Image (cartoon, rainbow, N blue to C red; front, side):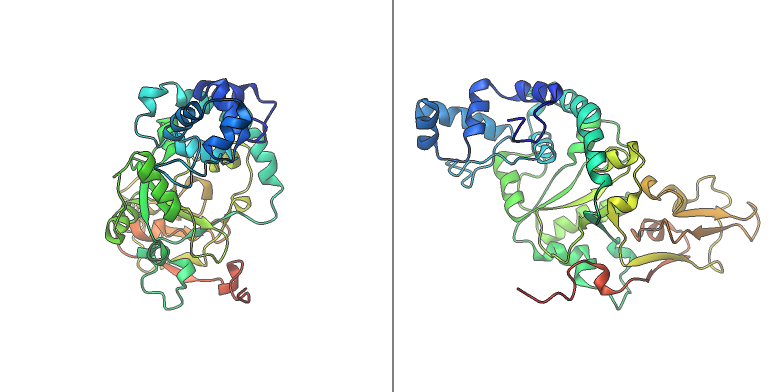
Length: 351
């Protein structure tokens, strides 16, 4: 199973796997995909035993079937990140596997993050693109569907929300919002069926927008695939302190441009409107700025004077819009600075 997850030599990955499955279950996973009868014959095991082992793995978030009731079409998704996200979103994991977060965290910190940082450093194109906070771009006439989180939600057949597994795992996130990971279509249906924590039902568009509104109020950054695709499995709204994808970049000092493509927008400060918030030791626009975009906005000039103003660093601004929403006087606006073809695939001929 560790080989399937592309890390066969990690003793800590083996420790995680041994904690969540028996050797028989590992043999079952290694034999996937397949139906119960086929697997039983392959493993020289009773069909009922195969179904019993499979049901336990499914309820732990380890395997994904095509049919959530009969478990037909079982498969194991060969990605550590997906296994982490699913297992830590199951409602009763603390009862069934009370050490799960610690076991996973040890593997991530000592083996997965260092290896991931080396791979991420080689990337020629960032895998994710920042989506601007929609409330910061409401008046933009050039807004594309691919820029707009609202449009992405409207494309989804089914919407669900689960707790952010990264915040659950670390328990030390600086952001208070936990139920924020948006799941779409098949991923949402799986989460609802298997009993992932959250509302336990499909969300209406209006309910999903309430989650998005809370995320924007909390200064979380919407992240989408860096492609012109309007459908996807999930929408991340991330912080800068515990993300399983983001931490390797920060801990190993990779530039944010290796992970994130900027949105098409950039924050601009009107110095004539900016009041400097001199009575606040942590001006709202600076305080809300994501840590992984260090220096995107700062204060310049002498405090307690009219010259004390917020200033945006264009190089470090990734166009998330968090500062726009926090300015008490509306001195910061989003400005379109990149063409449509900044998004890979825009304008490409349809297949």
